[in-house]
Length: 604
Image (cartoon, rainbow, N blue to C red; front, side, top):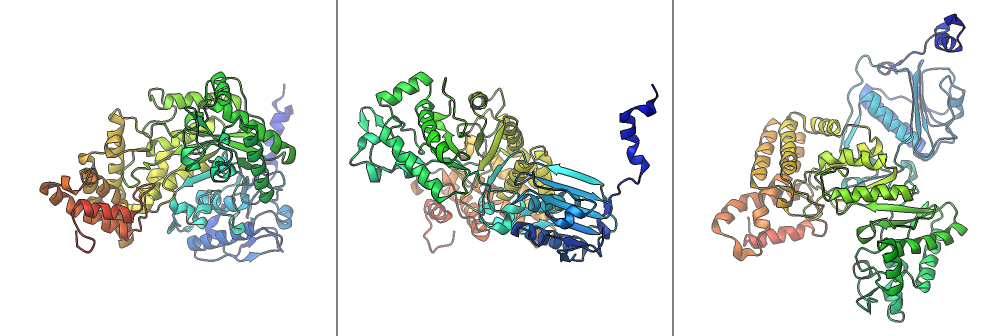
């Protein structure tokens, strides 16, 4: 057979019959313009402004933003428009999801457009990062390298569908800076239309405390609440002391009415929580216990209840999902029950080890979670993850879990998770390496195929310059030491639980002292000082562990006083707000001074 007669051969040879598409020299865009539709969404207009601003920083000149075109080339099309459709790089986004994006770079045109409302904006950030080298490192540090004299890109025709529809890197630096959160593609922080708004999928969280509060019903109807050891728990703090009786028909009616009222008030919601409070006081009455015994888990009575609510929601809101936590006592899947098609499961990893990956077959804390994750995946096609990424008892101590963030996110995505909430120091600013951690987590939530180590190195090198090497050495030491310790800590603990001892603390002090010497500028020196807080926090652990000031020896006081002074000064200088999840720095400062026997108005 003649090769030339093959249709495949003709398809392969076809482009050779005409001109091949050419790349674009990004260093030669002077005279180009940025085209947006007159009907552009606020997020698409903002996307054009973000492109304009960052490209101007890289190139030294600002491209004008226009709404019409009078030539076939030298345009940067931002967002869907008639002009884009009519151009040589035109395409439609009608079938795109809300964050899908497409980038075309060829033949003296660039097109960046995506689904609404966030796809175009995320497409611009993807272009800036992947083709201009821009890095959104922290709220106050964006790295914009010069475009140079020659930078040819393409031809490119690239489509991206983010694998996770819900992404939340839960740090104060993100939660309090919506512009930065948007640049990091965290889609859970702001409703602002200019920034694309939030995903319609909400975090599934504790809800019974507000849906059936004991303050409203407990006195007249104690039977609405959990029975433990023959007694109904109808008073106290609902969130931490009580759960509803899930086989009581009135409880089902009241919670269902509350859920329907919530959805009526918020028609934009894609899901709603019907979930346990934050305690282990699930109902042990005969009816609830019978279901739980049959299913081999307290999730039995909970899922029966959630399914019943979901059935009623489906009648009125067929496109809304009902979510519940698989958390603590309810993490184990039931034997025979299955979630309704409109039920979501938010699986929580609070018992897991922070040092080892979730799928580590030799980690005794992670093996049971892996088993539950696999079983839930067989029962439900809509699973989200609530993962824990800090030491909630000690926000400022070194925490040796940076290496497991990449494999854990990949594991969750591989097991069909549709959203991930990476809980960390969300109520704080200045937690241990919070800037690095936030950058790493948000990078991997957006693109789980990235190398975690490369992302870490990229941040360290760009943020700390020549000072990065000793900081990197200290991070590696902390992780190597923890991995060799045989420990399996979860997300609550003292320094010793994470193998952070006095030798580690001293190594940290020395590493940061070296980093300060290497810092090229005062700005970098300040970044190093902020990062060094974790080493000072580790160094004062012997003081913090004292029961009271009476236990302080003169030798320890002499050793701890300068370390505590520097620790507190740095925390104040860099705006550290929380010592741990429940303790503000003002309270920690008072305790440290009391332990050292120093009055409020005296110098340490």
